[in-house]
Image (tube, rainbow, N blue to C red; front, side, top):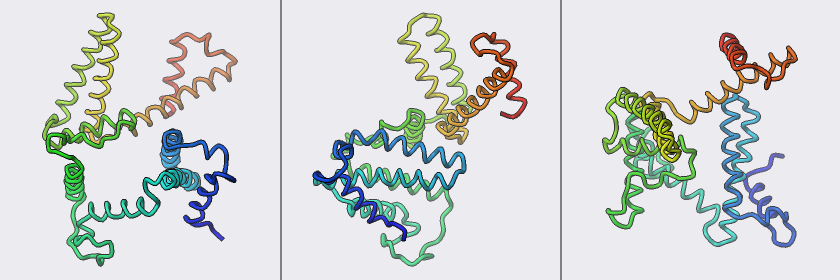
Length: 273
C-alpha cells in the first residue's frame, strides 16, 4: 500500500503533537524552516540538472514536506489551513489561464477556446499578474512594477526579475548591443574604482557590473542563474582534473607554479571538461 498526501499531513501533525511529538520539530517556526526550504529547492534543481529522476522523486518529496510543514505551523497559529493553500493556488491558476478556462471555471470542457501562441500566453499572464498587484495595493501611489519581487531570491535571479519588470514599461535597451555597451562601461568603472583604492566604490561597481551581466544575459535569452550554475560545474570539473593529475604525479598542489596549473587547465579544456 502506498502512502497518500493525507498520510503525510497526519505524520506532520504527529511530529508537532505537543505531548508526544518530536522535540526538534516542536522547536521550529516559520523562520527556522526557511533555510531548509531553500536547500531542498536547490536539491530539486540539482537532480534535474543531473537528469537523476529517481533522486528527483525523493527531492520533490522533501520539498513537498516543506509545504506541509508551513501549513501545519499556520494552522496551529490560526493563520490559514491546507484547504486555503490548495484553494488559493487553484483559483489563481484558473484566473491566469483564461485561454484554457474562459469562464473562470476549473471544469470548463477542454477545447472551449481557440489556442494561443506561447508569447500570447506569456503576455496575458504578465497582464493578469499586474492586475493582481494593483488589486492588492491600497492606493495608486503605492503601486510599483517591482512589487512582489521577493527579496529572498538568489541575487542573480532577483536581478533578472527586476529587469524584466522594468522592461515592461519600456525601461530597457532596445537590443543586446546596448546591454553589451553598458557592460563594457561598467568594467571600466570597476577598473577606475580599483585604481582609486576606494574599497566601498569597488563593492558598488562590482554590484553594477554583475547587474549588467545579468541584463546582457536576459537580452540574449539566457537565464543568468542557470548559466552561472553551469559555469560553476565547469570550473569544478576542470579543477578536479588538475587535482587528479597532480595526485597521479605525487605533486602537492600548493607547490605548483601558476603556469603549471594553467597548462593542466588547458589540458582539461582540450578534453572537453
